[in-house]
Amino acid sequence: MAGSKTAPLTERGLATRKKFTLALADLLCSYSVSEITVKEIVVRAHSTRQTFYRYFTSKEDVLHALLADLYDECYDRVLNSSGTTFEDYLVVYFSFWRERYGRLRAIMQHNPHWLFNEVAYTYNRRFYPKIKGLWATELLDEQGEQYFQNFIFGGLAHVHATWFAQGCAQSPEDMAHYVAQCWTIYKQPEE
Image 1 (cartoon, rainbow, N blue to C red):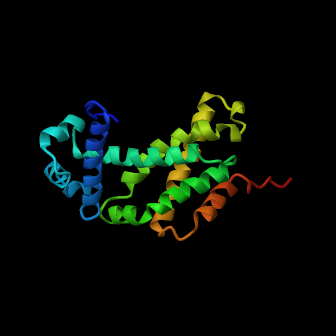
Image 2: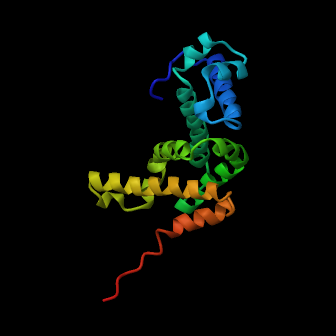
Image 3: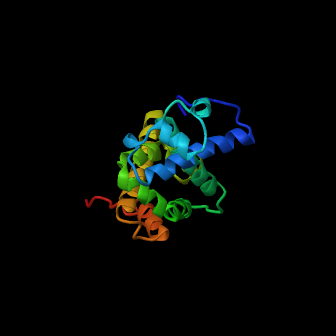
């Protein structure tokens, strides 16, 4: 996290950071990030400003930590899944987010979706080593591979955002199928 302070990350330090991220998450359910102050985060976390600044530089830093924690948890779940196909991994991915939809919906009612989309794209790129072997990426040069990643993860971030905006109406299995199907519906031009 750019700008994050690095107080010792002992169990106690991690627990303290978690108190601040949970406090911000609670506040985001009722207020936009622009309305929330560091003081309110500190009060909600039952801590002090001095302790806050030992771990974070700003409320935006806490927001990035909150979202990073969510994506780390999602990443771990996908990596530890028994999936072997892109669609299998997508089912795990969409299931993870659907389980958290209620809380995230409350946060998004008060905050712009771009907060999540920007972070989603960045963190989703970490899945690339896990799924890279599913495509013939060795045929791409470095620039082509970069565009390929942008296509996959930019698209996934926007599909995820659209699904959330529509209330997660489709099941994780349906969403995984829709996204995976994008790779199989290519139509050869007629001669």
